[in-house]
Length: 268
Ligand code: NAI
Ligand code: 15L
Image (cartoon, rainbow, N blue to C red; front, top):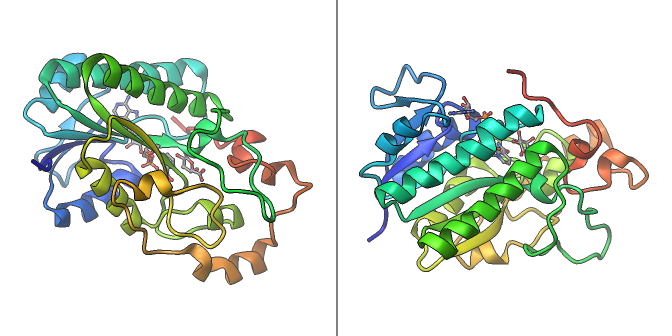
């Protein structure tokens, strides 16, 4: 049966807030969790991913987890280790102990961020391109994908790892024209990832059907995902403001963009 009750970790974050708005219309009953309290959600669980008992209780009785919680930018290795690496391990252990069989993991393009971006007629980047993290943050997403594979092979827990590009209401840079995922397409993709059958551990890129797309969406489409949006409607304005990407500029050379050169740092 299709999952109904879904634990949403990172529910207070940007993407979590967007998904709290969009996913209920697909029939999900979301159980929000975040280390930051969610005042407007009476059923929200306030817990840190370090709290194994709280995680075990939070996953109990759910059909699936949409795992968005964690540090979403670059930080010190110690902080990334605690929140993203140990935190994701704690979540998978809780799922194993409580018999939850499906996790959708918010991976990131920064797991492969040092991959040169396609230019001209170069082929799209396939999902099995070697991982080339651009930050400790990207490294933690690479770890999460390996953890997901281990829990499939060893424990039969299925995961779709979604290497999200940039999921915000609108793209705000020329790079984002290539990697943007509209929130509505994000909800479509997470819905497909939660419901597709026999996914084992599948890695997909998460973006809209952008004219300037850099990577191959075929593994996402194989889940039943049909993106409807294209960032090109924002191109004229962004290119007028910022210019086209410059092949000689190191900030523009790789999939991960400025994360490769000067990554934004987690402020907490
Ligand atoms: P965000 O930073 O707005 O939200 C992350 C949430 O996780 C925050 O509410 C934070 O309080 C919570 N969190 C952090 N550490 C925690 C811990 N130890 N225990 C419990 N909760 C904790 O990030 P955003 O943009 O919403 O991203 C969500 C997820 O998607 C992240 O895992 C991020 O790495 C991933 N992602 C997001 C992209 C995007 O375009 N928004 C792109 C690629 C990946
Ligand atoms: C990410 O992984 C970040 O979480 C998000 O804030 C964006 O910066 C995105 O990548 C991006 O590559 O634009």
